Length: 344
Ligand code: ATP
Image (cartoon, rainbow, N blue to C red; front, side, top):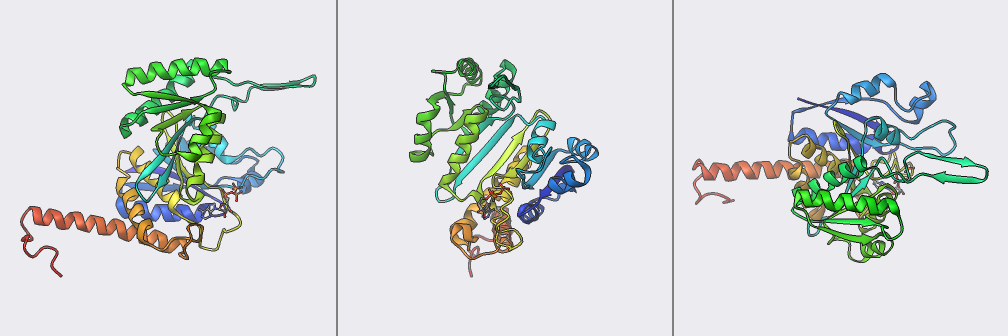
C-alpha cells in the first residue's frame, strides 16, 4: 500500500480533491489516504499554517495531494501553506502540464522552485532594496536533471528559456543545462525569455519540455494556462524523497460550495501522482480526454455539468476502457469466438 497525505484546503479545494480521490479509487485499491488540516484556520488556532506533528507524518508519506487554500494579504505573520510545504518538503521542481484535449498535445513547463529571485536572501538598507537571484551549481544541476529526465520520458527535447545575454546567473545556469542534457542525450533549444512569451502565446505546442528558473518559470507557467481553462491544469512539485500534486487553480471562493468547480485539474494532478508512485496514470488521462471530447462539462468550459457529473463521467469512461480491455483479452484467449464479438 502507498500512503498519500491529503490536504484538501478551503474554497473549492475539498470539492475537487474528493473528485480526484474517487477517480483514483476507481483505478487502484493500493493507496491509503490520510487527511491533514492546513491553511488560514489552522494558523488562527495554532499560529502555524500546518502543525509540526502533521508535517512529520506528511514527510513519511509517499506523496501528497493538495487542493487549494486562500492566502489573505492582510493576516500578519501568515505564510502561505503551499509555500511552507514546498520549503519544508524540499520540493525543488515544479512541473505543469497544459493539455489540449482535442489532439492530445501538451505544453510542459519545468520551473526551478527553490532558488532564483525567490531565494529569500535580500535586504533593505539605507534606501536600497536588494533581492538576491541565487543560482547554485547544485540547484541548476538537479533541475536540469529533472527536466532532461522528463524530456527523455516524453521522447522530446528541452527548450531552455533564459536571459543569458544580460544575466550572469543565467549564463552559468545555461552551461549546466547544456552539460546535463548532453549527458542524457537530450537536445536543447534555447530562447530569450522576453521574445519567448510571444512564442508561448502564438505557437505554444512545439517546445518539447520548457525549462526556466524560478521567476521566469512562474510567469511563463501562468501565461501558458491561457490556452485552456484554469480548472483543467495539473501540476506536480517534486523533491528528492517526496512529491506533492495540486491543481494549478486557487481556492476560487466565488464558486465554492456551488458544486460547479471543474475537477479535471485535480484529477489530472492525481494521474501525475499515480505515475510518480509507479502505478501508471495514463488510463486516467485517456478517460478524461475521452470524456471532455463528448461529455457535458462544467460552466468554465461552456457546459452545465456539476463537479459530480464530470467525475462520474470520467469514472465511467475508465470502467468502459477496463471492460473493453477485458473483452479484447477474452477474444484473444478464445473464450469469446470472434464471429460473435461485438454483436448487439
Ligand atoms: P486564490 O486567491 O485562492 O488564488 P482566486 O479566485 O483569486 O483564488 P483562482 O482560484 O485561481 O484564483 O480562480 C480564478 C478564477 O478562475 C475564478 O473566477 C474562479 O471562479 C475560476 N476557477 C478557478 N478554478 C476553477 C475551477 N476548478 N473550476 C471552475 N472555475 C475555476
